Amino acid sequence: MSRSLARLAALAGIGCLALTACAPGSNSSAPEADSTPSGEVRTDAAALGEVTLTVWDQEVRGGQAAQITKLNDEFQKKYPNITLKRVSRSFDDLNKTVKLALSGDNPPDVFQTNNGRSDMGTFVKGRLILPLDPYAQAYGWDKRYPQSVRQYSSYSPDGKTFGTGTLYGMPQVGEVVGVYVNREHLKEAGLSTPKTWEEFEASMATLRSKRPNESPLVLGNLDKWPAVHVFGPIQAQHVAPDTVQQLGFGQRGGSWQTSENTKAAQTVVDWVDKGYLSPKANGLGYDPAWQSFAKGSGTYLMAGTWLAPDLAKTTKDDVTFILPPPPSSAGGKVVSTGGTGIPWAISAKSKNPDAAAAYIDFITNSAAMKTLAETGNLPVVETAAQKAPDALTQDVFTAFGSIVDQNGLVPYLDYATPTMGDTIGAALQDLIAGKKTPDQFLETLQKDYGTYSEKNG
Image (cartoon, rainbow, N blue to C red; front, top):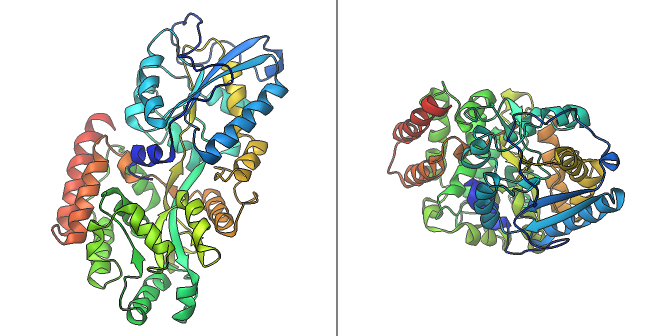
């Protein structure tokens, strides 16, 4: 979700569940940080001797807690020589504590960290976390995880370039922005689920005429960031994926002020003018918006896969989830905003990096993906092969698996700079309200992106 931190914090509760005790970290003395794992990579975890591995996570909510508890139990049974000392905190608490711990004498061995520039990027720059390329090759992560997924945990060694370079983290779960569809409303209007972008827009025109008291597309943009999940898929219809990645990751040399981005911004304006999108969207909250959709208001909801569990509880079989349909000229290639959950990383000061890598491999392997699915989470790879707990979530699994296979994920646009979340959120509110033209909207984004990327991209 975007804004990234707001999205992740919303998924996490507050708690402290430990296999031994809630502790600030291991008590071993910390070696000097190095840029690579020390010595030869060892993948036989059973042969590592007696090891205590300190693990910090934010898997405290519902299915998150269920999956990690189950996997931890299974890991300990398989490797009784490795004792897990688990420290579990809310996302906000973990985020604050990790920053202090990594530079201290008692960091965790393996931990979850937000993959944005202000967290993982800073840790890479400070050489506080290990590059995982040697382990990725040894365990085959570089083959199981496509580049469209690995890019979200990849940086240049100096931490300046995001989205390419060396792998520093491994996620368990994925997410993508798509379209929730009320199939009953389409049927009543004599429509079928759109397969192309042209059909999608044409269906909104038909729905607007046949259901004149509501906008076809539901959006609650009071919090500013939800509109980024409408603009992102629209942008992907007009702008080449490589260009979106360059802008979204804040890499040097790109430009928001192009004819393609102008078309995307103009589409938002056109949708408001045609009544596809309510001009009152800026006054409606995100939760009230999707909740009204769940109760039958509107036909389409453009939002992320993280809403599926809540929608599945109330919409039964009336609602499905599809990826944003591609333009007919794209030949079926689907591209949309998406990413991963919080990745797992290894402290550069860990005395047990091989055990930490074995743990990461265990909680991200094929068996782990099945456990994730069984506990209601969205596996980041091998998704389409999993059995979901309900029909809507199965649609989500199928959709995410498809877009990963096509390498069709492009980054959340607020990744670009530390301030882009606020910048693009406010600018989209102004665009929807008619306070900014498409050109003025893009000028605002270019100023933020250009200033930062030239210095840091």
